[in-house]
Length: 167
Image 1: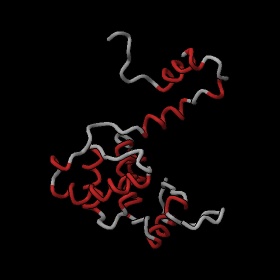
Image 2 (image 1 turned 180 degrees about the vertical axis):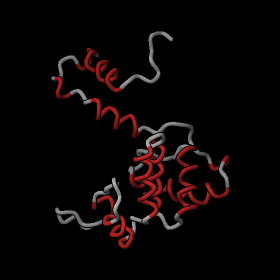
Image 3 (image 1 turned 60 degrees about the horizontal axis):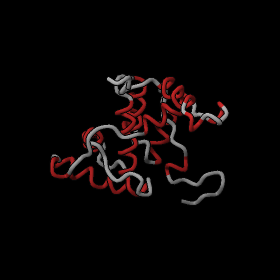
């Protein structure tokens, strides 16, 4: 198809950046690494935008507050969720109706990224199971005998950081 690979590897993307004349004068250290390219690609939304007109009643009830949180936390850089994200958000709220909207979005994204990776998926599921967004749940989660766990920085939880930030 015109020599265009619709799903190039991260190495192929980095190679294309290095060979692009616009970046030819940059030292290799300033070209994003394969890991950085992977993180950027994972962060990009995939799929069709969710629409209230096509939503199930549960999706509508749960997704609208999440969209408001997404707009707020991204400062308007993102103003929607995808249909897949909405489907997972509704499932998250069926399991834990008190999940904060921004946290529901974060976990939904991570679960979608984790598709096919049972360890990474389990980390998100454990986070929800322990209700780790609450002080009691976070403590239980941090001390649970889990082989792997997802660590959320204090500033993402609205807690003061070492710099004295009082969000």
